[in-house]
Length: 189
Image (tube, rainbow, N blue to C red; front, side):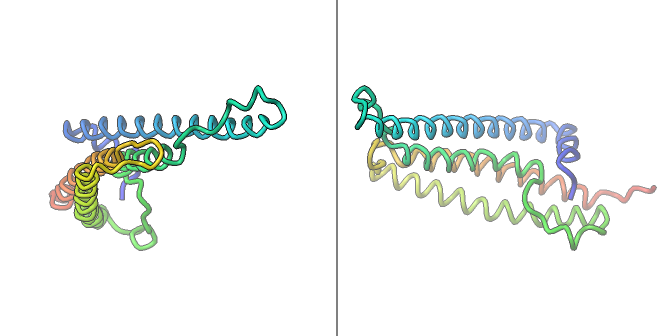
């Protein structure tokens, strides 16, 4: 498999690849912002709990407390944030690869392994997207909400489905690109 930098350079030559790369970068930035917001919520909630505990001794701190629904916010946001990193991970070949078997393989074997791996991701990813969409539609139809904040449960499903679908599109493009490399005429040294 190619390194992340080589993957990026290869994408830069293809307009579809450039678009997918930019979209993957944007999704990762969004995921980073969500993770940053999660850190802020966590700090506020922990500080609020600590200050509320001081309220027993100093009544002025009695007004403080944890962020209401902090677990609901963090669980939904965490799921969406993780999904937001999937397209960039796919574009940069950032998934775990057992390189022991492929280390000495030539470019055509690497292209074949890339086709198989990306095609498997497309198939499994499409099943995940289908399940997320079906689950989200079910949550929406039954108007299911979180316990404390009454946030619609389908929001998390929608965010995850969108980012997984983007990762599947990236994998489909990579499959086609690797297949093109696999069947390209051999270059002479």
